[in-house]
Length: 197
Image (cartoon, rainbow, N blue to C red; front, side, top):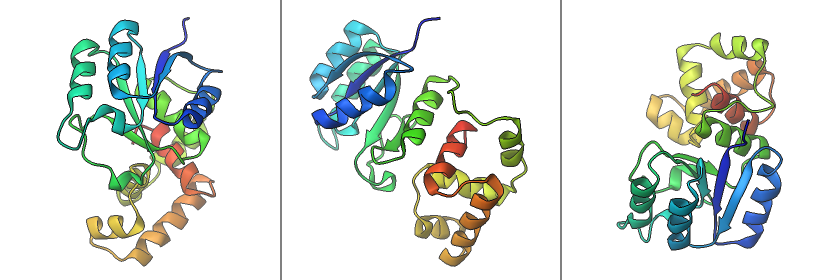
């Protein structure tokens, strides 16, 4: 079976090199470009399965989504994943709300999980049956908090959205780590992405 074909986009060579090293063992990297115009042109000509790019390359400015429109029009079947340098909650709302955002500073496992989720494929380190059972056993509130963690929300933002204290959010975070057998927020995010939360 052919490996999914990925086009990368970022204005920094070091980021592109790191992404290539991370993704090449599992995916076919068809190109790595540094600007939005080239990203759109390459996408239309090469027809990748996924574009993983800094969101700044998709938008000429905060009000002009021309690059994103070109990609959506030229290769509507191609999936998009935004790799952002900023905290996820600080990102401008994309024209297409279906685009998943993940931080470039996230753990490798989180980025791999985000790529797999966007492509709709499984990844080598997916949860086993026991791990899936643990996630299914969470309460509605716990699943809601886990989803917000995966979306990059801070404890303060979650507390405001749920109308509870930051201390209560931190309590839920600790309980989630304990119940799911993980130690970090990155691992919590990975589990949430693997479960499609």
